[in-house]
Length: 195
Length: 212
Image 1 (cartoon, rainbow over the protein chains, first blue to last red):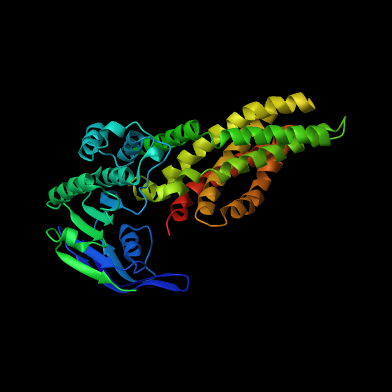
Image 2: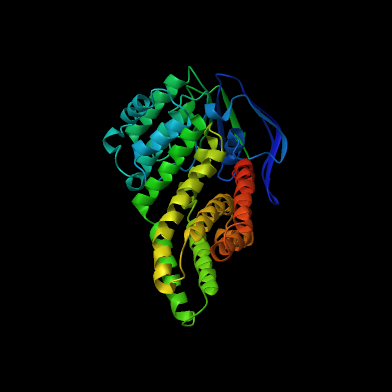
């Protein structure tokens, strides 16, 4: 599903990624690790198409509407409520039975009570839960997740563990993390980036 | 139909954001009224009607520019544009939704500015002037939204947007002033042609503005 050969990414004179080879088969679960600044986030942005490689080949075998991307930022509007944000994304992704799916995800991620609050008033952990709802809303085929456990409390982490285990059967995963042990039971491949 | 529903959802979102945050329209209103007040006191008593209309267009273009600088502010915060760009909908829907919302803000500002202009300068606003303003608004919002999208990705966005927008707004000002003071005819045709050409260019090129 993802095939990268000698991928390189430069921003001006700065080379962020060099010689990246990566293969993730359909149904695979690849974990990317590396120190701060090693290029994990850049690699994920290349895979989802938000950036283009400077050199090398990168093929991703899903259309962009079937990607679920969890970024560092939650990619939601601070002045809208959780419900309004998910409704907007649900419309743009043409999610069938949108309201039911949104309700189910908000329940699962324990945000139902806060669904009518403006996102600007959310804690960092609540924002991460909402970002996960947004990324999972359209049942993507390829999940590209950047530090998915960031800012989650024990309860949130438990919910995400369950979601990942359930979705592991249906999707392909590329996850960047500083804590690869968290994914030991799920991962099929691991890749370490060096600066 | 799905394209139009995407555009409607995106435009509605921008209007809702403005209703909540109120950080664009009040600034535009304050600016345009202040500018007209300043012009009222700087233009000599008994100044020409032509000069008054010239000042109106200066006020309108810079009011629009003020709104355009805020056009992608909500998307910059939290990098929301990345989320919109990854959605399967046609990316030009983002531009069209923004342009429609911007048009609503501009028309709302003009709904206050034109009566104020008539009050201060008594230039005799007629249907031709309103037609000129309406056609100019379309051009300002189509071109301005595209340029605001380009500038949003830059660190020097506050500097870049006026540098890109003002030269491209010159034909709009020429057409608008011409329609107001010299009647329709060629000036209306100029504005219609400008709107049509730039609407197509902006619609087709927005994809490249929001992708690397």
